[in-house]
Length: 243
Figure (cartoon, one colour):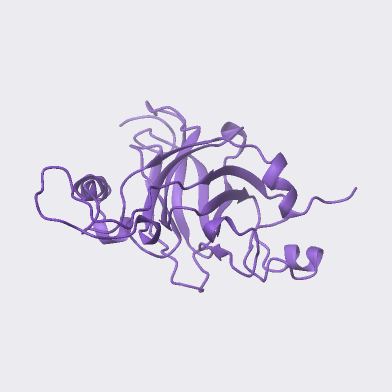
C-alpha cells in the first residue's frame, strides 16, 4: 500500500477544528489586547505567553478532564516538548462526576495574516520518517509518525493597512501594518474514540507556511506537544470504598 505524502493531507485530511482569533499581538495596534490578557489570566499565564511571536501550541485546561502540565513554547528553530507531558486528558473512572472531554482546546501562537496553518496529531513521534519517505522535502521540520492525521487547517486573514488609522474611542493617530502583526488562534480539536485511548499518548504539532507559500524551505514548525490520556479514579481510595 502506497503511503500518502504529507501534501496529500492538504486535500484529504479531516478538518475537525473550529477557529477563533483571540487578539492581534501588537499591544500598540490591537484593540483586543485586554481580551487576550483576560484569557491568559484565566489560564494562569501571562499575556506575553499567549502573544508569543514564536509558533507554539498551548493546551487549555478544562476542569478535571484536561490538566495543563507544562507549557512547551517553541523558540525559533528549536524543537522540543515531546519528552515531557504537556497536558493530561482524564477519562472518568470510578467515583468521578465529570464527563470525558472529546475535544481539546489549544492556542496556536505566532501566526500572522496570510499564514496557512496545519495542525496534526499522531500516536507516535518520528524525527526522520517523512524526510526518508519524501527525499528530505520536509527539511526535518515534521516530527510526527506515519499515522499522522490532519485535524485542523486554516488560513489567517487580516486587514492590512498602510494609511493612518485610529483605534475606537481614541483621537490620536496610529500607523502600522497588520500583515506584520502576530495573532494567537484558539482551536477546539475533536478527538475521535477518546474512550478507547486510555493509557496512551497523542503527539500534536503545528506547521505554518508563511504568506501561503507551500514550500517546506519557508515553513515554520511548532514544538511537538505530548498529550497523555488516562482514566482517573475519583474514589476516596484505590478500592472505591470509604473508611
